[in-house]
Image (cartoon, rainbow, N blue to C red):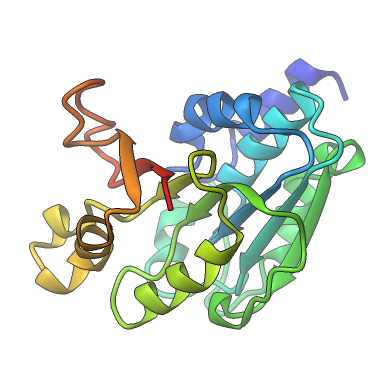
Length: 217
């Protein structure tokens, strides 16, 4: 399949934000050292996964591996969200085969490992992480447990972290969804590169809750 056709295919994958972040993924994948890992926790149907893999192919990150961790099961409002974007799925349906099909052409040229599991049980065995996408674990103690475990593989001054639910509390008006913001501000380990509160770049996508950070250690 031609590159342009692959792009058209992945741009049709139902998305909860991954497709909209395509240009940002592209930027930081291009800047990442070839050989570093990319870890995505919470892939849903692979929209963001595909954008990342596409950029890895585009920039020749042939020594890097994309680790994609998810339960790959339909639950909650995901059925409705998928249906509204043209994909019919069932509650508790295994979606890993769907995601692999969406990424079939990219998988021929990009190293992708799929891990069907609870993200909390994942043990990273690859190289240090260049880009980390966290699209789960909105609340504590889960979030803090997970981020502190993964930070062991981050590189100070280099690792880029996509906190996909950083501003989610603004939508829910719930203090329990402020775990990511509280941790970042208290730890002083991160520099905001782009987000709703960025004074340098300006507003992020109004419909998304993502904040892009650089890990400083």
